[in-house]
Amino acid sequence: MPLQLVTPPSGEPVSLAEAKLHLRVDVDDDDALISSLIATARQAAETLTGRQLISARWKLVLDAFPWGEILLAKCPVQSIVSIQYLDMNNIGQMLPSSDYVVDAACEPARITPVFGKTWPPTLPQIGAVTVTFDAGYGAASAVPEGLKSWVKLRVGSLYAHREEMSILMRGRIDPLPFVDGLLDPYRVALV
Image 1 (spheres, one colour):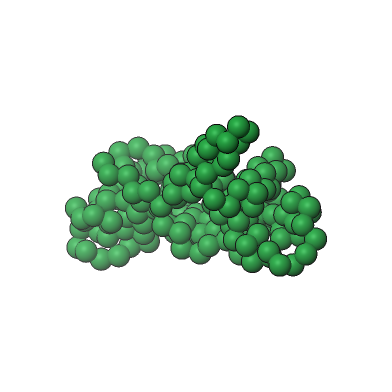
Image 2 (tube, helix red, strand yellow):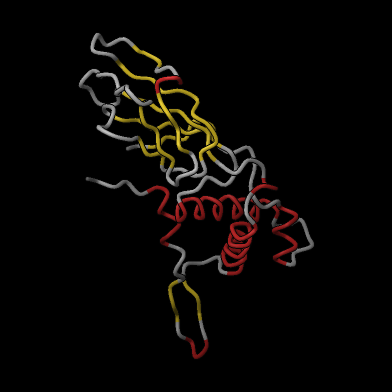
């Protein structure tokens, strides 16, 4: 179930001013660095939680409709924009919203055909079904404080430890545990 980001979030859950206050930085010299660390920390939070913090548009690509429900792995789901598929004649079709039910209260959100209907047959081809949806809490003000606090803590750690290793008391050198996690959003899972 590949998820593709269609429209990225328009902002960050933590502003530059909030991050600088947390870091106790009162000069503008590192503003670009801190801004990039905010984005990195947000992305790490989204990867670890399966959540979308600020609203964004996603597309789920499937080879066919499943036997049961479609699960949307970015939470919270705000709305389904469209469900499109290739019919058996290789013609793109839009599934009417009256033909399916969305349970956005569940995490992950679920989509099923309405009672008495089934998913339509699709062309037996990879990527025959796409579900486009909006996910996220909305604006930064709607993001839960616990998630914002985690982002600020991660920004603080990234700002304080700008290298891969940390030198501790008695000269011991330890790898920083979050460094490899920065690659998580980019990992390709081979089935």
